[in-house]
Each structure stands twice: as C-alpha cells, then as structure tokens.
Image (cartoon, rainbow, N blue to C red):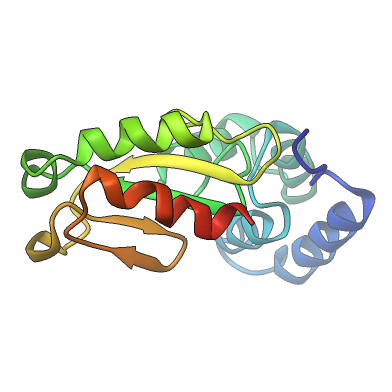
Amino acid sequence: MAKNFLTAENFAKLESVIEAHKDMQGPLMPVLHEAQHIFGAIPMAVQKVISEKLNVPLAEIYGVVTFYSQFTLEPKGDFLISVCLGTACYVKGSQKLIDKITELTGVSVGTTSADGKFSLEATRCIGACGLAPVMTVNDDVYGRLVVEDVPGIIAKYQG
C-alpha cells in the first residue's frame, strides 16, 4: 500500500507555510510549491486547507494545480521513471521501452505502483535527442537504450 502522506505533521508544516505567505502579494504559487514539496502531491484535502486559509476559491486552486505540469494530484513514487516520446526517441523505439518497464514493474503510464516505489511518465522532448531513445529515473539519465537495457536499469532501483 502507498505511504500515507496526509499526516498531521505534514498539515502542521503546511499551516506554517501558509502563515508565512498569507500576507504576501500573490501567495498561492509559493504555497502550492511548498505543499507539493511537503506532501509530494496536492490532493483535494490539501487544496481545501489552502483555500480556507488563503481565502482563495477551491476552483481557482484546482485550476492552477491541474494546469501546471509541476503539480500533481497524486503522489509520485520514490522513483519517477520518465521515457521520452519526442520524435527522435519515438522513432528509435521508446514505446518498446515503456512496454518493457510496464511489464517489469506493473506500472502503466501515468500511474504509481501500489507500494509507492515507481511512477511512470511519458514525456515529450527532454532535449537529449542525440542520446535517443532516452529515459530518466529521478535525476539519472539513460540514453541510447535498447529494450535489453531496461531490466538492468530497473533492477538498480528495486533493491
């Protein structure tokens, strides 16, 4: 089961962040960034607290959270696997990499494993076209991949 991130301790941290920003002009974005850092996501329960404490309509907060790609409604896994599906990577087989990752981890694009270990994202160009096809695991970049490389890469993070 995924780790509980909606703890009283995390909500106390959020309250401190809101208190520190509430009298600033335009406090919503800094508070959302901090909330994302604290909780690993900005689910509805967190959005409601921010709405009440900053007196910002919940619909506005939801709109911001769902518009900007750096925010997420669901927590990501400990290891965020991103596979580039830009043209160069796609032509060189990145979809096959995704298929292999799904086979090995049970995680499909846009989801997180039940144990909270892996999340899988399909991304557009990451600017490493010369290394196509490319995937990242958190901050680690892997390029010029073939499907046979994937099991070894995943195994490094399963331990």
